[in-house]
Length: 70
Image 1 (cartoon, rainbow, N blue to C red):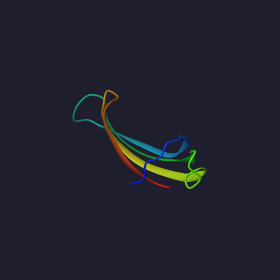
Image 2: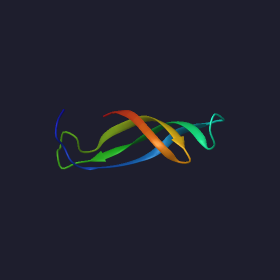
Image 3: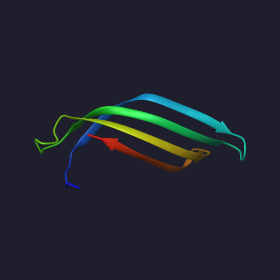
Image 4: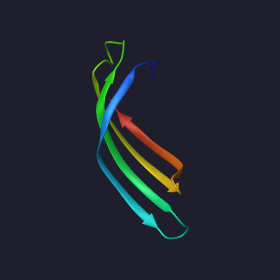
């Protein structure tokens, strides 16, 4: 994996939440974020990124996992 630096600005294009009733305030989230990366490395500057993620939250706290494509 290359070592790079930069910033990312994106927008959530899709987001879904399912409220579970096993414990109080338990939610499962699925989302997609799309945007553009800015980097001093010309090979990565202005590259489009799509990120897909899931979150398993209780009262707003919990694990978030995802992956992205440049």
